[in-house]
Amino acid sequence: MLRQSSRLVRFVRTPVRVYSPAPSHVLQRTFAEHHFPGNKAESLEHSQIFKISQAIQQDHSELEDYYNRIVSSKDPDEQRRFQNIFIWELSRHSIAEELVVYPTLEKAIPDGAYRADKDREEHQKVKEQLYEFQKLRPEDHSFLPTLEALFKDLKRHIKEEEEQDLVKLEDALGLTQSKELCQKFEKTKLFTPTRSHPSSPNKPPFETVVSFMTAPIDKIRDLFTKFPDPKSTKPYGGKSP
Image (tube, rainbow, N blue to C red; front, top):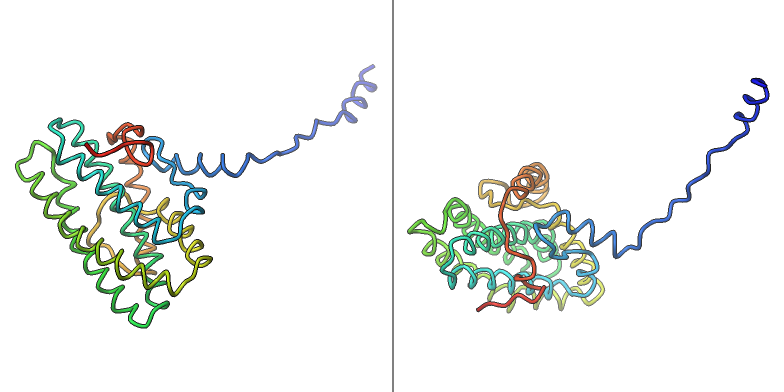
């Protein structure tokens, strides 16, 4: 009987489990949400909708919304939460532009190198201001003045970028390349630092290396950081007062 049992066991096969991948949009959303505090979908399906200029403009719009929420609020907790998301978004946006958009700008248009270097200089100033801002709390007397000075410079940069650089870049790229660049831009934001590090390099390849080293540390900090309820932020229906 023991011999028969052993022979039987020998021929019993473990059922083969057929792997069935989840739908791509589910994977994209799940992956994206692991990198965002809350529920904002920064997924690839988002990037497939937009040209690069539209994706960047949407980031700019969200930053302005967060700024308005901070300066108009009288609640320190709300200010703190929107301060955190403002820092989070601006840090990622700036580095992703430097890693993906500006190298393309340099190659795509005749004066691209000049424009990219000018944008990097403006970013550097904003990064230094953001570094000071992220050390402050709403109760500090320099909290709003620091933010207002930062946003004044940022808004000037945004205006030049949207009205000049991105217009020229879109003309040079065409629709297909613009969408491809947009996808690359959105993917890169998933792996960039979420705090300002103004002493880091601002050009690839060194910026790429430093960013990949710094980002995990920032993301650990994000786990213990307060952010706004996702329903109160764009693109989930949040509006500035």
